[in-house]
Image (tube, rainbow, N blue to C red):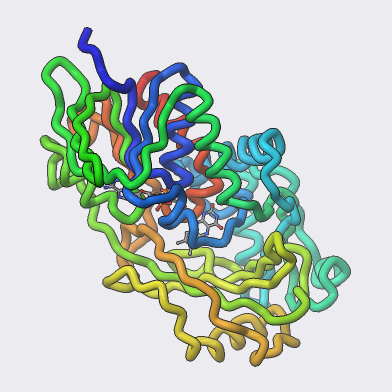
Length: 370
Ligand SMILES: Cc1cc2nc3c(=O)[nH]c(=O)nc-3n(C[C@H](O)[C@H](O)[C@H](O)COP(=O)(O)OP(=O)(O)OC[C@H]3O[C@@H](n4cnc5c(N)ncnc54)[C@H](O)[C@@H]3O)c2cc1C
């Protein structure tokens, strides 16, 4: 059997790459996580809602449905045992008009199929008893949804990988790999100290660079690389007291869960993300969107003071579908698709990727047969 520098190399130190590194190092493998940036978690994992999703919406039998529910259960335990801050505040999915009431039934039925625990249906009066400033025609409550400190979580994952003898190597972009005859990969890494290293297993979790990274692996069939799209989402923050304790979500829009309300761990109210397809990684927030945000928020919070909404930040979703196409599942592509034994290539890890991350790591390890 060939000797390898590492049992496994993971590309990308976002929440998902780190969770994959953790799952592999837990199984006794030596792991190197290569990260292009000078710090972990600077990509999609740093620009999102930090919501722990229940797993309500995702289609029956999809990876999103299964890995979100499993990932959420595992995540609370991990956060607790690693003293990472979270708030299991619960979430209300609200019907903001009479014609949205039927959608709550559909979401509840899907949540039951997905095995989401503790869900219940609330009348308008019951919802308002919980959140007096709310306007709605009825609601669903998901008590196990919450918010968490995603950066603290990623630091804890890094700590676990390093404690197991693995390495998270910063400022070290993966530049390509070639399969080794007899198994494994020869990896080229750049940066100030370019390196060549070998590994038995390769996992690519580079978020928005998934297509470029796959294309840099010798023998990866170009026809198996799914087309990527950028789905930008902007957030506005409220200057003033947060109006609700729980997460508030109107029913999903096409292609995303849509603008929602959360009270972050600092106690501040944040609204977003909307969805715009963009061609470049442009993280600006257009102050001109304030009116559109206020109009949307007013549907569930009539008293929203428009002047108190301030542009906050934006994130970009690594999407695999265009605006008018159906939203596909996560892709954790193995040798059955690309033909390269020992490689799992991740594509389209948009929401609920953060919530699912620990379960994605376990699934990747299972697909590698370790
Ligand atoms: C607006 C928005 C809101 C969201 N809200 C939620 C939410 O509330 N809850 C939830 O569960 N999910 C949410 N998500 C989804 C979640 O944020 C992502 O699924 C998750 O963060 C993806 O993590 P990742 O590790 O795959 O990607 P990333 O965090 O982007 O990590 C990829 C890493 O790879 C590195 N990299 C890229 N190329 C290379 C290379 N060649 N060599 C080395 N390193 C490289 C990057 O620098 C980066 O650090 C949201 C996403 C968005 C955009």
